[in-house]
Image 1 (cartoon, rainbow, N blue to C red):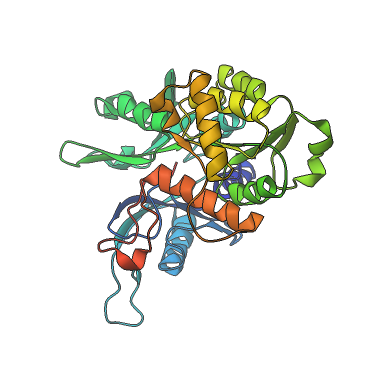
Image 2 (image 1 turned 90 degrees about the vertical axis):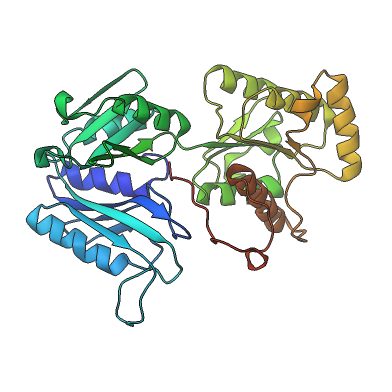
Length: 372
């Protein structure tokens, strides 16, 4: 399995049997498009459908295009905008515009897929670059698999525009999908990273951690729950966690960071109310370049915690990154409601959201970031 990515797992399963599948990918979006670039929908020869490119708006038309692609082996492109007045017109009722690229995938058209999957399963980040437009028709649909220290694929070197590998590696480094255009868009290449899922590290077991683990998993995080006390870390208490670890929190986090398993996408939340665990953990966490660091507790607890962290040598700029008390003010109280508020703050932090009702805002509903 590649994390929780159903499309690529199903694609490889069909590819391994020699089948031809139709893979539809959102390669460009404008305005309030419902899904970001990189979103994919797979249609297998047997009629199985996995994934989504629009959340339902144009899925029927894309499905038919994928079926045609499976039957005749041709590439297809389609651009969808706001629906017209025709009730049977195909468009995005929610607004925005998206461009979809549909390609046939089998062992002939994508021979590199096995190595892509093997790299992903080994935790090695790779990016798949697919040629969408090229002056030479033979180059359209070719793939290049890009790693941090090399690349390989079916695109002939003479057909690769200068700067393609550097551009693809930069997207891979950021974990973003993106469209690279060259020579006034005469050559267009779509790059999609396949990287290990981001991690959500939850320290201090209990109902709140269990509730956030469930939400974190649906958000495609790899969720770890850690506590120093074996009595509280029985795996069956946390069915939605990918792993449950018994270790001193700060020491576990330091080991994971040293091993390169904490990055700029990692979410760290402390549910501990014990300063002997909480302070060393947060000091370690705030010294890392993680996406989000939060700690549960009252405002009074936060004041004491902040003072202890200052005394432990945490500088002001690092302390300013701590979300404490954790979560957005949604008015909830239960573990599940609190988990929603924390997840909402994680999302707002990731995308720069303001956490206010969309009904009070003007402009596009979604300002989309590429899907990694």
